Length: 157
Image 1 (tube, rainbow, N blue to C red):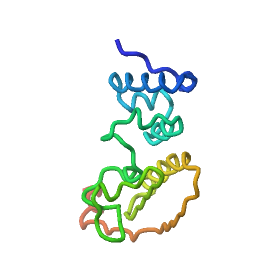
Image 2 (cartoon, rainbow, N blue to C red):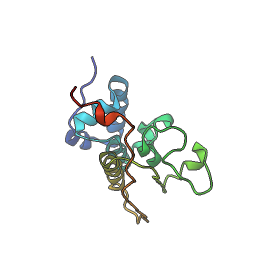
Image 3 (cartoon, rainbow, N blue to C red):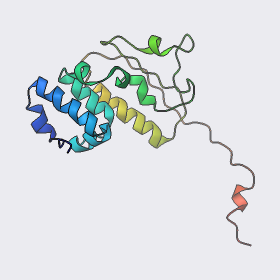
Image 4 (cartoon, rainbow, N blue to C red):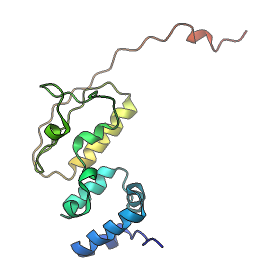
């Protein structure tokens, strides 16, 4: 029977070694979404930032699961949405050193989609205590023309 996920306040009261052991056990029994929901986290970034604040991130997160800010872009085809200045970069070149991060977003999104991206970024930044340089430009995209014939599809005969 799986070990139940304890409330966040109880977890925070444990010594670091016990926190690591509990998380490793929960990761085998539950999904990250289960842990997030049990602790009231809306985004995975909050979970990862908590691990970093507790200084147990490296001991809990597998190399393949590591969180990098560019993952906030979500699934995309090719390099759409990521606009490096010197052409596409390999995953290794995009990975910033542990004490640095970079995030670029160059894509057209709906208002709610952009709000979600910015909210995730805000949660990530709450764990950063260093100065951050920001350039932000938001403008309305040109309206897309409707395909011909759609306006007649709702007409009664």
